[in-house]
Length: 293
Image 1: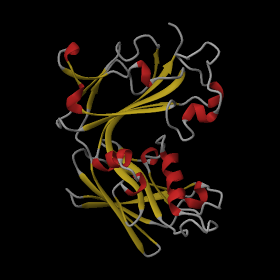
Image 2 (image 1 turned 180 degrees about the vertical axis):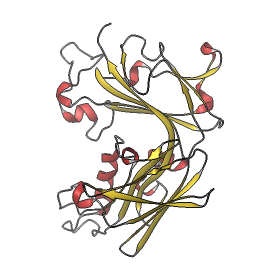
Image 3 (image 1 turned 135 degrees about the vertical axis):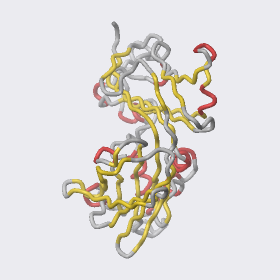
């Protein structure tokens, strides 16, 4: 997915894994083709959900996406149920981002991605999760004003899916720049704002700016709501006032391994390269966290 917030984490890991040509104690640089992207169930493979294909860069070179993006790959996406294949292409102004707006991703379907570049073939397969039906007082197509008091309990997200064991990812990311970030519940009155970029995002879009929770669907059963499956995006998931993006999605095995395995860049289902090619079925909610009603 083109604008996934932790894409930068992957790119940093890729550069780290590649080694450095000027470090005699480290491994020699080896070019690797990397894949970063997710298919979204019932959504098109458009520019917003493009598959990013890059090549690793030596650590002694300034990293730029323009240099790393692969512009001459032959990229094919195959629906294994229908046995239909589709070509993904990129635009000159965004080299490396491959998409085809005419392809709509089907839930509960296996797709294979094949990338051919410089005589090499890299491939990955993912099975898109079944539909995750979400019912909530939040609107996915508008900015939702919310307030710190009882966050999540006033507007819980109820979810339904046919797979009791499906993993559900709840992802909260603050969109405010460091200069405008303000704690909702500071430890001390004199500590209302993060003192540095590292304090704000952990140096790489981590906590407290970016908070994720991964839970099986069956564990979301809520007796207080008539045994419906409910997600309380509780106050501890929102740390800062302002613009926040909440994503609730069912995820596939590749994304699960990428999030939890020790070497994520090697665990995302990519064969012949590194990175992650996964799939999700979910919804995004834009939140405006305000101080008072």
